[in-house]
Length: 378
Image (cartoon, rainbow, N blue to C red; front, side, top):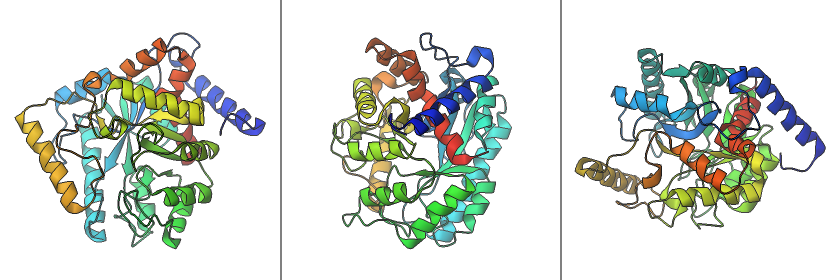
């Protein structure tokens, strides 16, 4: 949906109008200056907490308070595992992960909400809650039994990334030197995801796998969390041609807050803004979003955090799923974005650079909302 053909432009405008009228008057998207509290804000990849909370631990009251302060209408949360987990073990772990999130929603219903449709996100925003969108970042839980996709859809999974960094039965991840494309299984999965109403995510996929999926999909696809290769040459970042290809399919590319924006060093807010602006230049303002790939609460860099982070980097290397530039001090957040209102900070920086409120609203949530609606269906 690049700013070109009239039919696509018409569909975009019609969708935007429908969303605006679907919201109550105080939440309607206006041409006035960007307002964080009343705008529809969506993190296309992230997590409640500080990114260090473990499965099975209750989300603390402090983390819930920060989530409410964030103003997020929805956040796309990752259901593990990823990598070389045996299929049956991966399936069991994924189900366990979903049930844990379900229990957390039941435990904090005034803060958290389930998301099954795009209307659920609007309802969460109206109720001042944050909707949780369940997502996979690998196919290991279903790659040997595609019938499991129906079960996962019923359990609420609405975003599926075809591969993580390594190869699976669907295709190659971005760290595979062969860079083979989608397998027959991969093509079948794309077809099934389109029919079920699950967004096809390509964030960690190899370049050829991504190209094959973009071509095969009949619905919009996304790089929910990535960066721009033109600014930082890293396999997790996307070329201008890839950003445009996703745009032409009607999808979005979400900019993350990761060291891959800054040559392996801890990123800054300026790095994030630079990648947002480049993505807009390459793909158009209707096809850029945010996927922080981090926690909502601020990270506290104490000795326990440093040790846990270093241990995680080591474990990822040993499992063969780490990407280049993963270092023990390349923390996955920006010091000047280390808090629950980080997207408000980014919006303020974009405003100072001359971007309109309408454009910022698109990047902060409206674009991703449109893609969710198109991919998920009614």
